[in-house]
Length: 260
Ligand SMILES: NC(=O)c1ccc[n+]([C@@H]2O[C@H](COP(=O)([O-])OP(=O)(O)OC[C@H]3O[C@@H](n4cnc5c(N)ncnc54)[C@H](OP(=O)(O)O)[C@@H]3O)[C@@H](O)[C@H]2O)c1
Image (cartoon, rainbow, N blue to C red; front, side):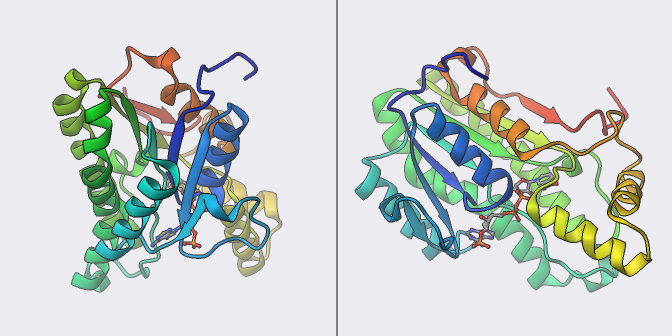
């Protein structure tokens, strides 16, 4: 995307910005001239600018407060917030093994991290009368998979609903709130997972990759999305070029969701 996104000089918080989709979003926004502040639990070894990162666990109240304080102190507030953080490490075994702890984990990481950070940082956006919030959801909010990820999928569906409700409240005050809903994205973690699957099932990488796509019901374009493709979409939505877009969800899944 070479056209000017008119993002130069904007200030952004990107959560979960050290790996996968978040890392690509950080890179894409920086390329567009945005001052990006990011966060994860661990700083990567080769981080270009220690002042633009804070280590925190945003699945906790304390972690969100650390991030919000750092954004105010080091960035002077945010014009853009991209809530990338999310995921699931719940065990397989169906509903019965997902106890209250697993459900709380799923909700704390995938829903409440965004709720808490928005609550802390939105007042400054409202005071300036402008801002953009992007919530990264998942096609699992429409297309939940059984077994290990039902709590994750339900949390993402709640995030989507919250995002829409928030957009109704704050869009008239100059803040756009949008959702990006990825299907399978071939991040480094996904590559590790496919490599492991290949090893365990006695096939090669491509065989395991095809198997994973099949388990999702197939991906019509024949491949997962790339982190950079998600990042390009996020950058466009965060830019003034998307000034009429709020309260909507953009699915980026190569056609995986089979319904209208
Ligand atoms: N990849 C996919 O196929 C896919 C599909 C649909 C939706 N999504 C969504 O897209 C988003 C990004 O996924 P991804 O696959 O790119 O993730 P990823 O590669 O697993 O990276 C996750 C990032 O979040 C950080 N993080 C994880 N837990 C955290 C916590 N408790 N507090 C603070 N930071 C934390 C990680 O760093 P640390 O480990 O150092 O904390 C890392 O920077 C998620 O919301 C996910 O649900 C992904």
